[in-house]
Length: 252
Ligand SMILES: [Zn+2]
Image 1: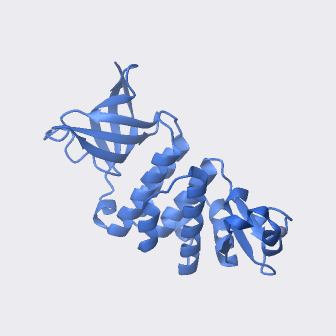
Image 2 (image 1 turned 90 degrees about the horizontal axis):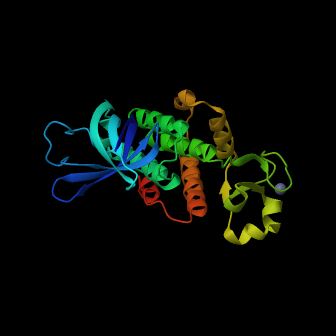
């Protein structure tokens, strides 16, 4: 057994047997890890109030080369983000952020930028407009994952985005097609998603902003709805599976 320590965010947690819990963490030093917390259901001191969804922790864990499951031995709270569990909208948005990280990462694949993006997002979700914050998280997540959405011009004819024609987002292109190109595209059977000029400009601007400038952006109702449809569809296309919490987010 080797002992390690790292900062970690709780992505998922469930009871295991009489007294244990199984927790999936995203950590700064080791990427995604799955851990067993022995006696966590009964422990009055060691883990009480610490192993909760979304908590930002400092953990000590032990691994061995015979199992992918590590054993968490200690946890100290860095930030508990209580507002994420007491407000339904914030809860849904934080759950979706967790679900995206769960689906987009492999175990032990370290990504410190993603860890910082996740803890920053949880912090913003406690105080700022939750849906807009979640969408900004998703936009930056795509970029971190290497999917730099092409939103400044048509992917086919390169005409710049302006009000002279309509633009739709096509997932197989990872970007926009103008209406004349969309009419000719073999992808048209998969159906592009029409986006308003306001939404395209907002997303372009958002991508250029560092996370500390996020609170300056305002999403109109139309931009929120278009962006949610865009990101839900693009996730489904890229992952080839449905992320369940999008449905709850869009119902808010
Ligand atoms: Zn075009």
